[in-house]
Amino acid sequence: MQSRRDVQRQKSRVSGKQVLIRSLMTVLVLILVAWGSFAIETQPKTSAQRQAVSLAKKYADLRSFDHFYVYNRDHTYYTVSGQNRQHQPILVIVPQTGGKLRVVKQASGLTSQQAVAKVRADRAVKRVLKVAPGIFNDRVVWEVTYKNAQGALCYDLLSFKTGHYVQRINNL
Image (cartoon, one colour):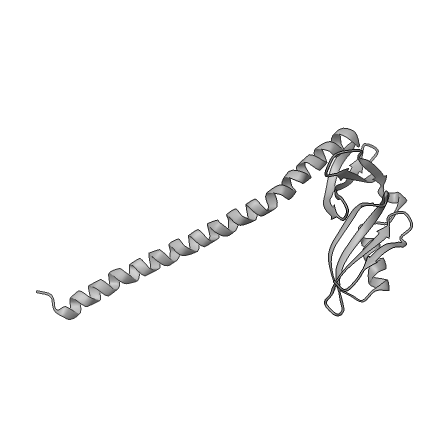
C-alpha cells in the first residue's frame, strides 16, 4: 500500500510534466501567431513589389532588380531600382493607381546615399528611417524620413536632378 506522501509525489510529477507540455504548446502557439501576423502584414508590400517588378521588366526593359521603395505623399508610388539591357542603373517609378511609368537613369541624378548625405550635412539627423524616390509636383524627388536630434519626425524632399530641397516638414 502506498503512503499518502507517495501518492502526492506521483501527482506532482504528473502535473510537472503537464506544466512543461502546456508551456511548450503555449510557446509554439505564440510563435505561430507571430509568424502569421508577420506574413499577413507584409503580404500587400510583397504583392506590390511583385507587380512593380513585373511592369518594370515588361515596359521599362529592366533586366536586374536591386531595391524596392514605397513613396506615400499625395499619391503612392512604387519604385524599382536595377539595371536595364545596357547595364545602366535605372529607377522605374510605378504609380499605384496605374498610369505612365517613369524611367529615370540613376546617373542623371542623386543616389539614395547622396540624398541621405546631403540631409545629414544640412540637418541634425539622429536616425534615418526611410529613403524613397517618388513623384512630387510632377518632379522626381528623394524623400528622406528621419528623426532629428530632439527625436521629432521630419521629412525632406530633394530634387532627384539637382539635390535642392523641394519641401521640408519638421518636428512632427
